Each structure stands twice: as structure tokens, then as C-alpha cells.
Image 1 (tube, rainbow, N blue to C red):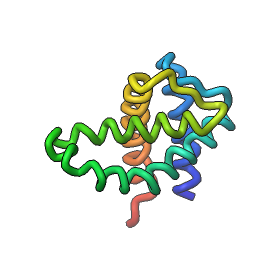
Image 2 (cartoon, rainbow, N blue to C red):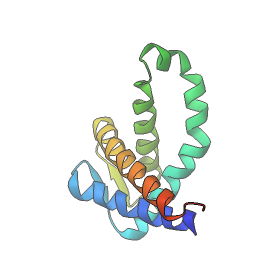
Image 3 (spheres, one colour):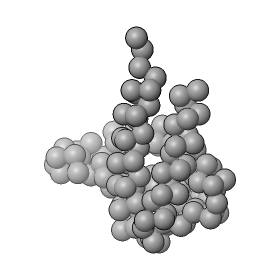
Image 4 (cartoon, rainbow, N blue to C red):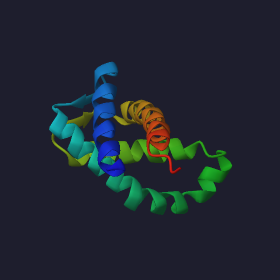
Length: 117
């Protein structure tokens, strides 16, 4: 139940990112659902590999390179899907930052909602 709710809220936050930032376009809620799934899949499969491969750069930049990795995941999802478009790397960076902040808010809200007693 928690995973399904997180997926729906992530899709809604992707629509919100597209609404407040013109560099990100989402055609429909269905496209947002698919994009949220693909972004999550890329973050689970590709992101750990990229983090390990770029560990020296991440250490030198004191972790700031992780923002670049997040933007690459966001941009890669947009390049694979039809109903989800990102204008460029700068738009992917800003869009992924907004999306990440909303993701943290969703996680904290769901953590309070599904807290084990």
C-alpha cells in the first residue's frame, strides 16, 4: 500500500514540477505515472553503479556531484519516454532538485502515516 501511494504521489509531484517549471513537460497523468516508475527504476538500478564509478569525483566535490547524477537519471528517463520531456541538462538539474525535495516531503509524510507502533 505504501509503495503504491508513494508512486501516485511521485507522479503528482512530477506534474507539479512540470507546472511550476517550464523546462519540464509532462503530457498527462499516465505519462507522469510511467515517468515516476522509470525514474524510480533508474534510481534503483543505475544510480548505485554511477555513484560507485564516480566516487572519487564525489569525494573531491564534497558530495555535490550527486546532484549531477540525480539530474542524469531525470534526463535519462525523459530521453526514454514520449510523454515526458526535459529541455536540457540545466532543466534536468533544476527539475531533479525540485522533484527530490518533493520526494523528501513525500517520504516524511508517508513515514508518519505508516509509522509502526
